[in-house]
Image 1: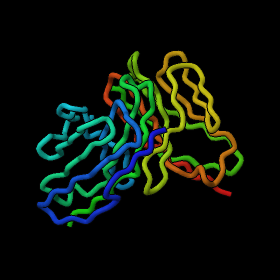
Image 2 (image 1 turned 120 degrees about the horizontal axis):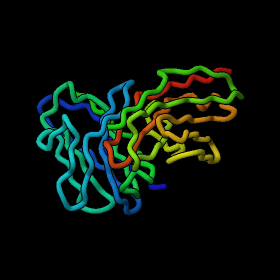
Image 3 (image 1 turned 90 degrees about the vertical axis):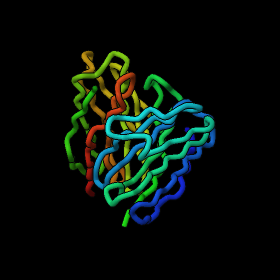
Image 4 (image 1 turned 45 degrees about the vertical axis):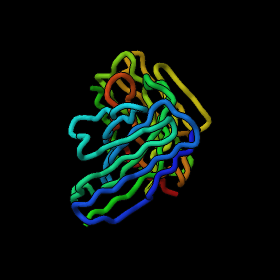
Length: 116
Length: 108
């Protein structure tokens, strides 16, 4: 399975600032996703990162707050903009070789973000 | 949207078989059922995936009845290292919807 590297693994940020999280995969993948996971909670899909086009956002998530880039088939970034304490969470990148759900996702170990 | 429901927690002892059931009444024709395991401070790890009937791999089995409205993850002979949160995911044309997860605690 693909090896996913997320950077940074954790960060502490001041409110009002922005942070960009990187997701690097060791092989080309079809699909890349970004999730948020509050401590002790399940995963919530933020968006699907589309190569060469705008990301597809889930309800409740907007591009101005969570801009996403995917310049190629092995790399994506998620920016958390104008951060507030409510954005404190774990952000996870996942990848899949399938487009119809018939291939499992493989996850990075996440970025633990704390906003002061 | 396919919503999933799982037990919040389960307890077991080493060496026992554990079965975790997930309900997904609104599963769509093109949806697959995937189970993940998550340890603290790690991303979820793929366990098994199926569409219908039974699937088995080296670590688990997945049972899916004909109506596909539920699925059961079976872990044979669990060990202490199987203590983790287990998530059921319904994945396909519908939104990727993770359940709330089942916290499995394995005791000696």
